[in-house]
Image 1 (cartoon, rainbow, N blue to C red):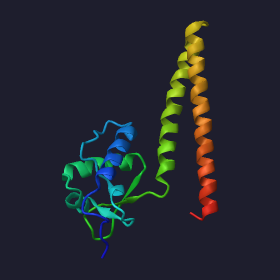
Image 2 (image 1 turned 30 degrees about the vertical axis):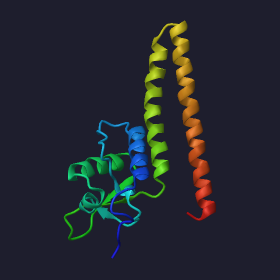
Image 3 (image 1 turned 45 degrees about the vertical axis):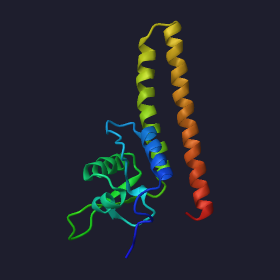
Image 4 (image 1 turned 135 degrees about the horizontal axis):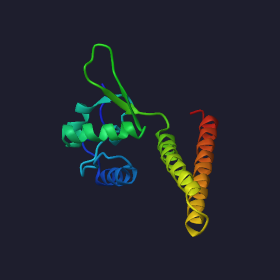
Amino acid sequence: METLCHEKPTEAEAHFVQHLASRLNPTSFPVSQDYSGPHSSCRMSPITSSELVEPLRVSKGSVSTNTRLLERLGIVERQSRPGERRDFFSMRSNPHAALVEGRMTRFEAAKAVVTKTKSAVAEGHSRSKFADLERFYTLYHESSRDVLERQASQDSEDGA
């Protein structure tokens, strides 16, 4: 039988999770003060929402809201099992890449709007500002792609 690493997160872990949640929330999901998620435990196998409520001393609603956020960000995966009505959650392999990929997607969408707007703006100061922003998005995308490639290369070297 598997057990969680601790009955509740340490103060340092709780602070880290709350800080991370506030930085990663590009969605409309609220970040609750009692932020929780499958990454709050040391267990790597799938876990149900109910299994998080008691040890973390948070509400079912908080667990549900925040596991949806983590799923949407690509950090956790929802799984079902034959004969089970409950959903199980587990960390996605390489969740950091999912965060970078999500940011790249959002920035690419923003770049498309900037490019379209730039083409509609007359020559001058405003157009040069849009061109600067377009270059920024291009550099961000290229550097993010490089980070993902380096991560994948290191993972293959490490046998991950």
